Length: 500
Image (cartoon, rainbow, N blue to C red; front, side, top):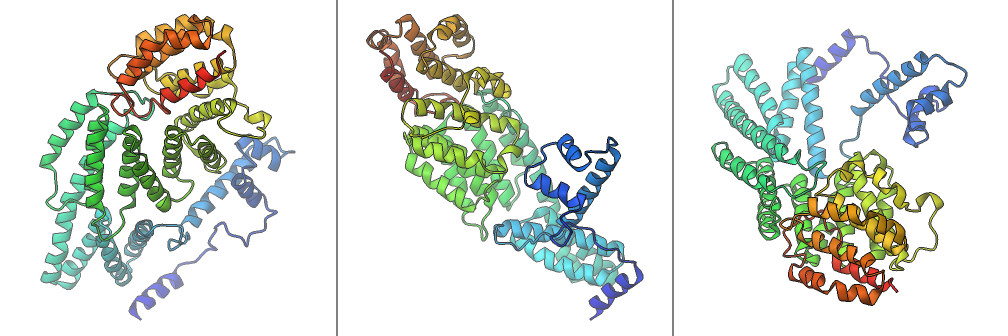
């Protein structure tokens, strides 16, 4: 009863304004709801569109931007009313949102002097934070309780209990922040540049050595995750897929012993296992991890698109081209696709190029394609500006897919005009250590115009290159997993079939 009295007294003494949120009770004809629904349904893609629709006879922008500000403030208010128990969220996400909500509430209660309610909520929050290893939240709740039992109750035993948690979480949080920072210092190198970076091996090795001084006696799930990902970066930097896969398997075994499902670890570590499995031709293992990931990922989030990418790549490698086409279309029509970072959408443009290659090769049966969806080689480079500059990385599949499409479409003059430039590109950017297969394959492609686009002559003149390609199969190639989106041997057979 005391806690209820405390809350009622606060609300009685403070004027409560109408809570301005967005809900279904608001008149849909108001400009506010027209703006909200227009954005939600994709009707307004920018401010100009929205302003012209809502204020067609008003050249003054102040009214529109005031409306926009009001909507934003209401949406912020509405966030506090999100149903954190919704079935669309996994257990750990529900727990995270619940503890964050409690944490915010406690801060308000303490500011207003409602200590009984604050302490009640802190005890509740601490139980959840401990159960799910939320270090930062544990620290906050334990600090709140430690202060209360010490300064207000004079309870030495309880003080020591909470003091142990505070000290443990302080040290653990420091360790988690350290390892997270080192991990992000590696990740930043790969966002816009997918080329092999052998120097990361030494960097990651040094980080792992440095982290020995910070390793907690009882590592948290977050520590295990970041430690694993740094090890993954270490071995993936030199394209050692077997060691990477071993690291991932070991970490997942450890993560799976936790009393709760640490979704972030399972999803992100499994995605590395999938990439390795594809390169090592362990396709069943890769598909198992894909199925597992998609079963726990909410559709439309970043990792959902990442898993669709990996699934599409696996389909390319197993010649399931029709299935790849289905996966591609499911992803790009999702309403969240347009919100992805530009560099992420560019990767899908490369997949689209290859899918149209397969459509024209009659490997995918498509009755009709909208005029707007027809793939245009002439615009391709402009649609992938980030990776077009990534000369030793994702520009490799961009270039190869361009050549393959031009050959397929019998644009022999264009190929002949580009031969010298392509040859120089090969010599400058495709070194034989990390891009050996790509180097060899482009030599094969350049042989086609030299052999007058004649099938038998091409076969004879590329025998030596075909042998070189066979000598270093995909599972033994020392190259980035992002480079050979589909095996060069498969592309070659399709191109040969279309030569005279």
